[in-house]
Length: 507
Image 1 (cartoon, rainbow, N blue to C red):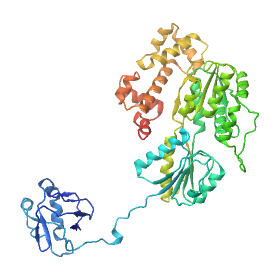
Image 2 (image 1 turned 60 degrees about the vertical axis):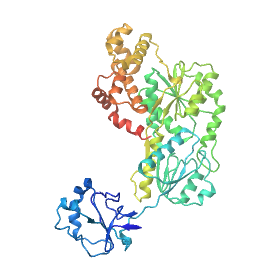
Image 3 (image 1 turned 45 degrees about the horizontal axis):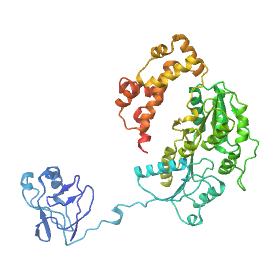
Image 4 (image 1 turned 90 degrees about the horizontal axis):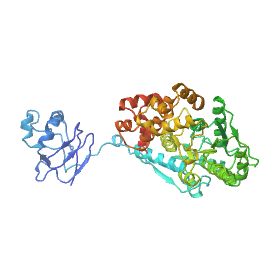
């Protein structure tokens, strides 16, 4: 037999026999309200539990004039009954098998329809997979969607069977005009995570090219490189953006980088004005001879910034073909941090890791706002990369001064042991003034700043990859206390360690 109550309780009331009234609900309960209930005039009686009685006695008094289950009879004797007397007496419960109480339709809780979302994101490379993981993190935190995701490559068309379906929103990495047209035909809010085509009914995300260039230049400068170069795919959108940002960053620092100008004409997609990215990457496999000739013209040692990991692997192949030592003569840095591509390179390729997880998470967040009808002020978002994953292709010190190289190596080996500038001077046997001058001339910073930089690199790694508390992180990085660590970290990063770690915890 089923019973329904009509009272709303401020706090849950658990009866001795196991029946629970939940807060704010007019819910249902199955089974009898007690093991051996007393029934009088069609109504049931039960004894409340002692541990929950006192929290609800005021509500009993409030409800003494209420009616329940269609009856006009009030709680008998409740008005004149003291709490202790009520606790030991039979209390009329608000369930009746004689009537079924239904709320008006307008007062029923409306159950929202679960959104239907199409994901047109490739899973063939790390960037797309990390975007998908970011979307999954958003769904775990904010509620699930019905999603359709098909295994696909970056340039695969939208299947006809998918085009005939209806969706509430789309998250895509739109690589060409044909895919863009297919997405527009859905006529729903759209978030693009590629940055090449801007959807009319949505927003787009991309990795910030200026931030990538700044990280690349700083990475090479930290290793003592004074000669820099750029190798990309001409007329490919992201490659041209990173090239221009790299040139601007170098010019601001008084450096003049070299850029490979290919003699090959890039292939364009049929009927389109932009270059086929995957076709240009495949064409680049036959560029080794041209790249090797270009590398031979560069002053050594040189740091080469490649537009992505595929181009970085091709540069490494050309360097090997021309018998250049990597990383002593030619150091190479890519973008995307695709572990498969980087680890299959010879030697393994250092790479800038884009924050694709954050791009996916924030893209999903904005799609939810668009599907709710919100109008966004900004329609283009640039997300800075996370960090550099250092592998053998840049793991070197390109410094001609032997004493300076020894000082830098000593700092990188012992910085997290709590050393100071005095320890560096004792290890190198040169004066403090000379050491300071040589650091400024070669690295653009003092020995103390270099010690702090190495420590901060270690702190960021521990915060991102471990669950260590701040005291343990401080002890592993040469800080006396967690408070000293927090102060230094805020000064360098502009945020607290907890704020920096939060995005990595959400993954």
